[in-house]
Image (tube, rainbow, N blue to C red):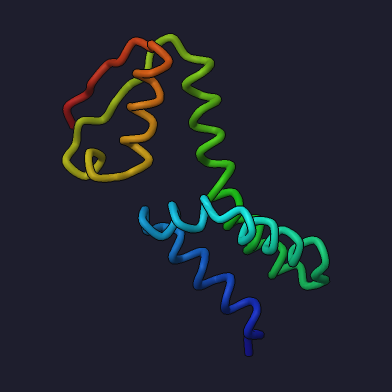
Length: 108
């Protein structure tokens, strides 16, 4: 059977795919510090792995998106209905616009 700690982080990882929940978790620095501390101190590799994936989903994915925009002259924007509703797509579009990148809208 899985231990409660592992189940907790698997649930948090799944919930992080909700834009609203991810936004709440991402902006809670105490939460991020605590889970990184748990990963550092925990001997269970599966717990460390799921925490690493959660941190990547919440923090590093946004950082990677920003780095990509920073290193681009052009940014391709998906104009699909689903992408218009996804917070990450909106954030990337707004960030690229603010950084004065050439925006290329693609109708999908």
